[in-house]
Amino acid sequence: MSELDKVTLNAGDKAVALPVLKPTLGNDCVDISKLTKETGLFTYDPGFGATASCKSAITYIDGDQGVLLYRGYPIDQLAEKSSFTEVSYLLMNGELPSAAELAKFEDEVTHHTMMHESLKAFLQGFRHDAHPMAMLAASVASMSAFYHDTLDLQDPEQRRLAAIRLIAKMPTLAAAAYRYSIGHPIRYPRNSLGYTERFLHMMFEVPSEELELSPVIAKAMDLLFILHADHEQNASTSTVRLVGSTGANPYASVAAGITALWGPAHGGANEAVLKQLAEIGDAKNVAKAVERAKDKNDPFRLMGFGHRVYKNFDPRAKIIREMTHKVLGELGVNDPLLDVAMKLEEFALKDDYFVERKLYPNVDFYSGIIYKALKIPTEMFTVLFAIGRTPGWVSHWLEQQVDPDARIGRPRQIYTGSPKRDYAKA
Ligand code: SDX
Image 1 (tube, rainbow, N blue to C red):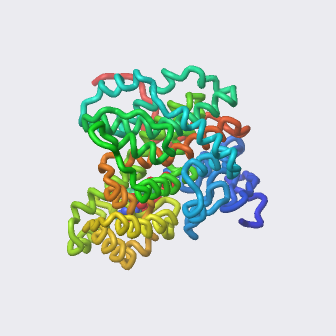
Image 2 (image 1 turned 90 degrees about the vertical axis):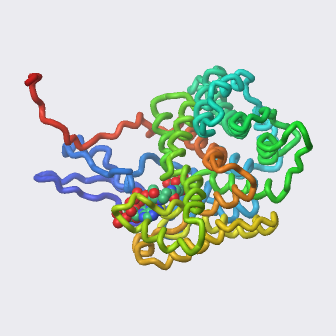
Image 3 (image 1 turned 90 degrees about the horizontal axis):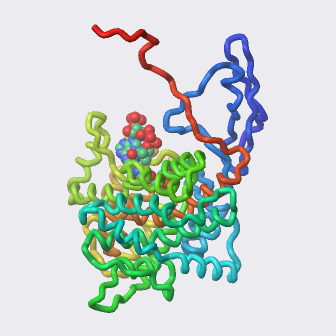
């Protein structure tokens, strides 16, 4: 944090004093909201790498130090001591719940897990080989057609209930999309199970035999959900906020976030990492892959590497890397792709191209290997990311609804098209 309380921008014969806003943690921000009125100038920042879109109290990231805090709590402490439902409560409400508050929250979420029966017919409209992200995004957007009692955004209780419904139903819709895609019967959520166990039951239980839920798998999945729960103003969360800024309902806003997450540069990277590791196939091919990733004429990039904010190890990647060895060991899984991943990481972290650009493994680099060990199909990896990120999305949407500074998101541009010209046909 600097000592600055304002900066002066000299624009021709004008000197404009711009206030400097102070965060609790992190970079000071120059408030440019009056810049255009005073100077006629816009600012240009493609990808918003240096632009704060809002004030938020939910998550803090220090990219240089590799720090991630949810409501001030370090991610490694939450990973070790908390649960996904407790972290969801924390993100939504700002404080850790008491035992009674957590029990009440979990009970409310549990009793909102079922989806409307018509949604099953909705899924029948898809081909069996539809990507589950397509089915999830569509199903979530359609929730506004079923839950008219949570569409009055002026009512704080309706806003809260919509958030609860999204957290509660995301696993049900995700599992339903998967089960439809493999031609298995869609399972109803079991209220006797905890949040993550309930999801695994809906994913894998078949009528022909009892499902033995592995506590190792359930614990690993719950931890992965915690690690994905929020991440400040990433592309999908910014999308939820942008859509939410128009007054669109929370289901439409979160559905937009799901579609943004799908891209391989964002949440789709976990699926892309596993495909890439499989393409590399063997540790002896790693050097060639790293050379390809450095070749500007080759669009090939090392998926799971690099980050807009982290210029150090992604703290989540560190936790997942340790977890990968533990979970695969406990499950007795020996996946050659793990050897390829470790060799790739070792090679890249020593290569000048990656070192100079501060490209480290991110959250997506190892998660796919664990998901594979947990018998999650590759096309479901980004769907799992969406389940984990839902508490973050709804918390940012709720925060935005009561933000006095919130306005409709409407960026400007640098126009590079044709000057004005009259209509004439040759
Ligand atoms: C997530 O924002 C979040 O918080 C996201 C996320 C969350 O929790 O919400 O953390 C989740 O999306 C993690 C990121 C998952 N994506 C991937 O793993 C895809 C591979 N990574 C890249 O596509 C890239 O690193 C991004 C998209 C993650 C970041 O892109 P930036 O910030 O725009 O970086 P850049 O393109 O400006 O790259 C800087 C340089 C460039 O080289 P030069 O032009 O300087 O020569 O680094 C190079 C890039 O070519 N580079 C890579 C690379 N990532 C960046 N080169 C090879 N392989 C890579 N993976």
